[in-house]
Structures are given as structure tokens and as C-alpha cells.
Length: 177
Image 1: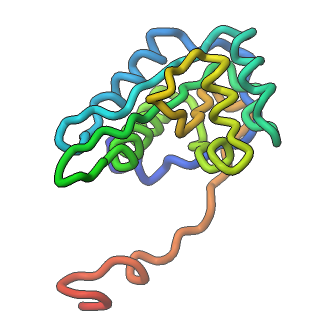
Image 2: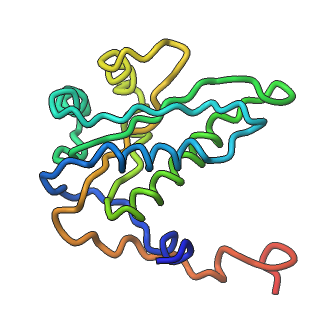
């Protein structure tokens, strides 16, 4: 599958996963893809923690309410640090977003499925803080995303219908040509 086909076929997967471990080699490849993402002023504000230990993963999933990815055999947690990059600006949101998209594409390319869970863990009930405590994450980092990784137990759905290209993309000005 070429890269454009991969991009156009990737969908968020929220279904059950097969009961099969994800090899560390694959997790390393996925994380390497994430860390290869562009970073504002090369501040490299994004860090990653892969969890493949079933007991630890169970503890993490146990604090996520409502539950998500209950059968995923592995997960990657995305951490961000706020580092001023340029003109008093921090680009950590852009940095970790690029890293997550790279990892989602790598996950798909390797035959796995995933879903970007961010708001669910960072909203007012602060599940991210519970996850950070379990993983021993230092205070200067914040967990911004939980990415389950595993093989789909069923056939992934087609995903939501996207608006027509012409409704969201133009040439030479808004609504042009």
C-alpha cells in the first residue's frame, strides 16, 4: 500500500482487539515513527511510553472511565512538555499532533488498529493525572493521548463519511475555482 492509500484508508478503531501481544520490535517502529515527526524549532517536546505488560496495562485501563480499548494488548501514551520555542510560543500541541498522526499511520502500515484518545483522558476528571501517577511521569510532563495498539478482532468499519473535496478545498482563494 502506498503512503497516500494508507492515509486515505486509516480510520479510528474502537472495537475489540485480538488476544495477541504486539511485538516490542513493532512498538519500537511505531514510536520511532512518532519521534521522527516535525517539531517546532526542533524543541522535541513529545515523549512516549509504550505499555505491553498486561498487569500494568490493566491498571491503566482500570482508571479510564468510561472504559476504552479494554482488550487492546498494548498502548502508547503520548507525553508533552511545554518548552518555549520562538517568540514566547510553545508548539507542543503541534508537535504531539504530528507525532500521533505518524504513529497512527505506522500502526495501520504494520497491520494494527488504534484510536486517538485525547479529550477523554484530559478533560475535567483528569484521568491523565491518574495515568501519570501509575507510570511515574514527572510533573513537567503531561499525558495528552492514549493510543491502544493491537490487531482488530473484527473487520474495522468504513468510518464516517467525509465531506466532498470541493466543500473544503479550493484553489487561489476561499471557495475559488
